[in-house]
Image (cartoon, rainbow, N blue to C red; front, side):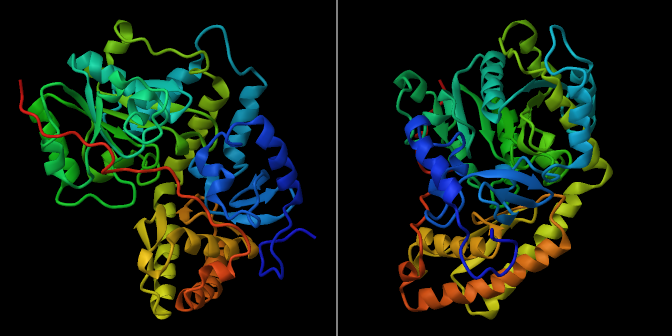
Length: 446
């Protein structure tokens, strides 16, 4: 029988997952469309590789095993799987068509809604993936300022202008590589040291897990104003989660442009570029940014229903409340066990469990915890990506599992033998470097 969300006696059988994976090895480069969903991010031999159904906060793999999901599609499921209001909106639109030969009214209706809830969203454009709109924002910034160089902080997608600063930059011309540089989060001096007269924009995630310190975002806003630089917030993770209006609302800092995806359409593919009308006006004639599926109606219908639900049910407050229970609960359990090498950090809507290297290889430790969480019916990647469907029962059960799993980890660490407790292969590092990997030396203005 497939495993349930319970204290199962055995690890889940994943035979069908493995069969599909074997076929994918010959057909699909890297086997996955999304790195964070790939098998290298999960303990090999224990974790499922393919999911086929979701409902609320629970998912079922292709072998029928059930789990509470704290990955939530790597972010998009802000409300939950198969959420009735959103799914019904998609079905109603499906009866009338998906993509049309002229513009669709939903393009205007959703834009009006976004304008109402997101600060500084004086203009709105759509696309399909986060990388589309971050790249569009960079092109707009260069056109508006007449400058070429970009400073970035965080992860901004797969396109050349960003990936050129990482160690995944094969296939990118050096000329592009020489136009983008990184700054360090919460280090305003690193920004000042990187500015010259050709900086068009600074793009950053308003936070990843570390909160801004010493008014970092406000200081960044002032620095951009003083130097004629556009400030862009990449709100793929913060948008509609930390607050309905994202980080701009939460921290009371307005960016010149902001980009969104993930949480806005509860799993449907949609990304959004917003910004000041004066800046975005270059999209009228000067900058080319058009896609066949930008106005696809199913995703827009989903976005309208999702935003209305996020607003009407005050979902960001719910995410924070449920996430706080998990974050505080985990830290209390670890503290009671004297496990000072692990803690849960970040904002309540999306928190991260960390492991100090002094206790051992963090990837091996993470794999052991993941292995034991999966056995007990929790799909776990070290994060708590909260959704509106995570119930009190989900939280209570998860904390109960932590109370059983953390003592196993403590024993393994105390014995200096984590690998002995692993039944599968450890996870690989996730590609998500956010600082200190391609910086720009200080230059004087021309």
